[in-house]
Image (tube, rainbow over all chains, first blue to last red; front, side, top):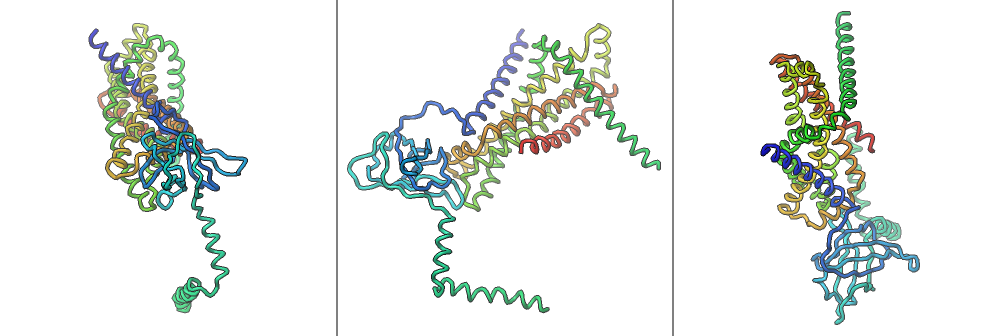
Length: 180
Length: 255
């Protein structure tokens, strides 16, 4: 009797643990997650021309301190902009109304996050408020395009001159190798 | 000429072996419905194969996850994208390392126990005695062990993956200083249900393969001390090879 009880307990707890692990994998590590009771918070929105590859769940921070997360990304058909909803922790309830929201990149190739820069207003943002000043994501292709356009225009600039002098120097060793 | 004949014979022999394994599997499946009436036998085998393997599975999972966290951090740091550590570790664990390493450990821990137990039953004529008493040894002894292994294996793999994710989190977040929020949020953004499904399918298939090989080798072991030893060895070797082979097939199927 006693032996079968420990056996049943062992089997039962093993199976329970296994299913708990499966449940954890399907809900907590994936995007289809179920979020449990969230701490007190309020929502803010902001509209961006371009958010790059910002994802739902990306951090929202001010001066590097995380204050919340992106909860929804939608498209605004009136203004043709990306409408981002952020959930801010209720502890951070003194964000000035004229604050600025920008999309930044974590590291060189990391994911995007939203950085808030405080304004100088005496009034603070409340639930469902919209952040007026936004700055789009830094898109590498656009930057390269701009750089290329500048490069074409300014032929006599120091940048292009430098690369011109570099090019023959790099090519020379190869040609000597070939002649050998 | 002789070489060719030997080669031919060994080929037909291994083909016949494969055939008899498949026939054995069909016999097990046919006997399963009746064996399901004795749930207490199955639950005891789940305990033997699963609950008793829990410590080794959790310890291995923890260390595999910690190594992933450390290696992944070192590599991702070069590109300044150590925030993707959670994604890298979780996908690696859920899709590959969880099912495969669990199957290898399962073959070593539970498979050998099954094979030697059945082999010893065969060697000491316990299986023949059951047949004499009109008890079907397949239904009474083999199927509960097989089903116990099949049920335990996916659960063990899931536990392995979860412990591994926490191991990676321990090293990445607590020791190396990756942001906990980025670790989890990037993981949630990148890991889909499809990845989890792949892991579950793999662990179920490996569970069937490893349990089948273990009970087959044990049931058909040569009834001597040496034969039982050889059956145990072959269980581990065959399980490992088949696990890795099936892993490739399922990975390719899910691409």
